[in-house]
Image (cartoon, rainbow, N blue to C red):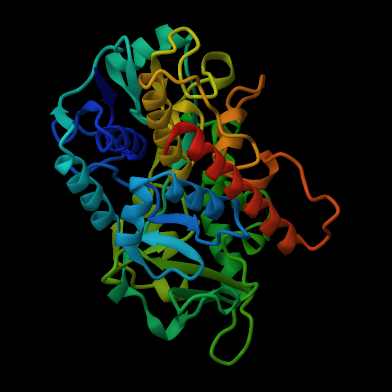
Length: 431
């Protein structure tokens, strides 16, 4: 039986590679490079759009870091690619975007059981996987809406990228928060006066199609910096521009700091960390250039905002990512109701595992909510009138170890319990 996977993003590639590398025939349908969404520009698969960071690499102290380890043990292609394309980023797992996508593209094209087809899908298959991402459009979007009773949406934003050589190093210092890492970030300090002037101009800057956006529709994890700033003059200093854990060469903590993270292995481009924005391009250059280190910055890419579409998962999906109305049709990636690069890849990996399990005649097996991938899978099925996409976090894990007061130790115990569950799940599905 050949499985059709529509969409070669992180989720679709995980599904296709997992199945194809285990002897299942797969047809991977991707419309690039024949057609691009408003947010994509590379012809390669698994293109990272908003950021080159896959968040924390800390297995024992961060839920997303723990999820990565769970995925490694389940045979994740994206985690393999991340290690191959990794660039220094302190405690984060950041990658060279081009190398990351190229690695996955090469592995998919070399997989003997995966056939890639370059075309735009316009209808739902009777069975297979829909992994078209949050920017699904055209006839396929209409087909999905008809099958699931409509789609929800929110607005997502990406941050600007600047040329490394254009950053004025006289007004920046190298260092990682709390000394973690190997000096992977460029820190751009601001005085109280500089910070307040920046916030003032940020709030007054002209935005793109502002009338189309409503605050309630913007996902908290990708909140534009101008909306964050509108919550109070010190909001950014306790978030994106927080100086905690950083000190300049003289041992002083700045009033506020913008961090720049390497965008590629060569270090020729830097991402403005946390500066997702919906400002017009000219306004982005004007306002961000007020930061002393960026006064002569060359912008290689401006931040953009776009509409993301996701399903009302509790109403239409099962915990194995299959459709309630048609259990042979699966949804994976952000369209399924998970949020984030790693989480999207996870859903594709699990969809592949569930499909192979079904093809082998086994009963559906869902990881317990003691591990992150199980908790996310189960979160999607919990009735929720105000459902929104969910990131990996400890709050969705089954409660435990309440007797432990030390937060670090408690997280380690949660991590150990999660990996025990992954090993149990691997045995159940014969992985």
